[in-house]
Length: 519
Image 1 (cartoon, rainbow, N blue to C red):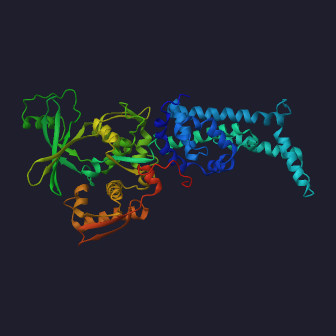
Image 2 (tube, helix red, strand yellow):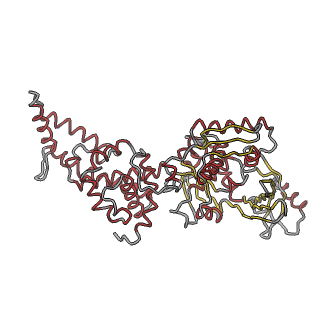
């Protein structure tokens, strides 16, 4: 293998390996402890395989995370995830076939010269041990019973190679290679099924626009827009939202460019009244549904699919059914779910925001930014494939780490869209507090009202709703450890849950090479 600059590439696999181990089966962990850890096959794994990686050369007693990282690095450097899964399943099948062959020969009486006669030797060892107890066994029956165990192992496509009855009797290099195949195949399946096929799938990510600006409403509602025609002769429906924050006045401009029928033609000289009349003639209303927390869940799912593996690609694809299941938290989504998510995805393609922050005293512009979502989206219902193209803004947010992340397990525990949105909002405050060395903050009720776009809701009703979301997070032990409403219900003081070691690794606060006690 060409190991030139291998370490810098390999580092991308270190953190995922820690989280893959977390989801690895107890059976495989036990086999690792029984056959590999601190034993000769571990040295074979190091001296024959891991030593090729500069980042692993320093440690002749590698951790299980090191082995996992090496395994997925080798597998995914050769081919895409799905192909790698198939390849390693084939490798395991061939290994099984080779290990089963002498057992089959022995049971059928067609024993080759190199056959170790494992069944007979094992039965004879059992018989010798029983002599001390003044007992005898039926050699043939013992062989048949052991052969039945091996046959069951052979037939189970998910059984581990290292769970082979006679695996401990194999040469060290054979045990080492078998374990590498086991750990690679299991790791790849975890990447696919638990991490959505991404090395970064142990976290859910949402662009920081959704936590720093009031983009999504906690109620589904329509907003009135004003139509216009842009320089590209496209109809644009616009709306503006203004809110105050500290010493700033903030203006959010929404622009929605609806898809129009081919026969809809426009003239840049048209008056607003003429344009409204024409839109009405085509049954195109001026009301646009505001982004809500379901849309935020869709954005989170889409943005979480962006990774170092595909940041340079124009398009990202996934299983549409799986996508809908994850957004709706429904094992068996109905047609209405698929249609709703598809419609919302199409809307994101035509929707964009611009943001301007003004100094409240002078009126001077402090910051300006544009917020785009996706450039295109295509849903192949027959093939069940969702393909989208992330906007330049999204790619920039990813590259510059301008997003908030939460471990996937915590995110998936929460079923309410609104509570999920509160979760991401508070996660931002939690990480900011952690960076300052504190674990609590006080936030005004106005802060929550602004971000939830519930300015006009009666205060007592708003407090009850916010309390419900905070109570859910507290009971689940996610982000919120304790909270209390203070200053006559004008603020809420929140004590955050401490970051675990796994979270510190996940969010980039720790670069420990491996954890031995995280399963």
